[in-house]
Image (cartoon, rainbow, N blue to C red; front, side, top):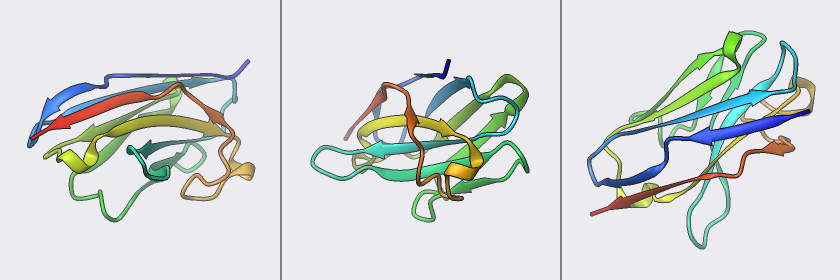
Length: 123
């Protein structure tokens, strides 16, 4: 059974930092796992994508200066570290995972999602 659980969201002031964590199970040893976010009134956008097979991680170009990812594939866990947060980062952040052959390097094609974690940045 696939289970994806996010944690770590909350309210933060502009300029602050926050780390989101995601644990995914039910995929075996090889899987891709990524973070997406959806701001109010906007479409969901990719934040990061990690591949357990080769250990690679993609972070969206517009965010890589402030966002980073750490992974522990042995524990099926990925962490999204966010710093210098801005009001534009306010969104629901979703963790998703799937089998590698079903997804691209930016995690397009993911079918399994967590419930989402709200990050609210106040200025």
